[in-house]
Length: 123
Length: 125
Length: 232
Image (cartoon, rainbow over all chains, first blue to last red; front, side):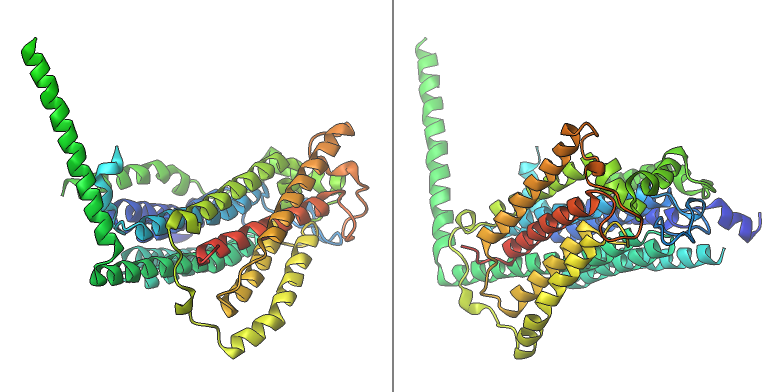
């Protein structure tokens, strides 16, 4: 298998997406700081969005927007994953803000920033 | 094929930035690096023909999310300052902790006394 | 040690689960039946040039309605978690540094222009890339600029609440109007669809997306204001 076959065999958008998901998961599980966990969550979210969008990637096609008639539906990519990811990004911001406000709340309430300090509340 | 190689190169940058964001010792650095991941992601989305998603990701992922993180971080730092000041002055948090400890002691004392009472009553039976 | 091993095991398990999605999956050559139907139908049925907008607002409009509700719930959660009543006494406002003269002047100049740009983005959501979510974010950025230049200021909460709830209610009313006219919940054809490329086209899609834009803008500005702190 030469390089070109290998490139055709992979999905070039899904590869970084999957690796980012793994990096984000590792960050969530291995880092103790609550703010660092939120950062890792953001990285994971970007990876998930890329993985969803990779399903709609079609080589040599353009954005699904019609203009004066030069573009036809036969030259457009899959619009459904784009619509799904569009809403997911906005929700992601709101969820991150909620997560951070919990962290700030714990911190101002005299709690620690490290998740290790909340061992008893786990169950 | 050229586009594929470009996408893979952008993906390599994203993965490196993401690992940096998770590993970085300073929180500020890791927040800014995670904004960078989103910025490169929006470039990738633009290249694969998703301009709507690219706009959203650039505005939200690398713009507003970073700002939200920085505001939250500054709030947490303020809280740090407040508690450390209070501890130096021997003000409210210590008193609260003292009250808390007293309450827990009395509660456990109550628990013991009732347990003792139960034991006594059990003994009487 | 044990924990590291478990973390590694979880990551390897997820990696193997993701493997078939990435390796050997390749890239498809033509869209599936459903996207093809949307690509054909969006300009023909609704007169919408941007197919993604047509999907977000009408084909999957119910999804977006739920999404806006989730956004509202998250905003309410942030606001209630960070309210001064919950956090005890507020922090002294005197410690805040004020913005410089340059920032103040530039933000006075730019805020209104940014709001106008956001309105432009969501009004043209059915023609060009962009729409309610992007336009709403741009409006929130204008509010952020105002908050940065004058840290003691606050957004007018009454106005924000009014914009947010009125646009949400109008969204639901427009959606229900489609059902009452016998077209279906959230059908954009309650208004004439017009010709592709005109500003007044695509039925109620630009109207609904503008309402979403106002709602998202108000909610995200509320999140920023709540996270900034010192809120009464």
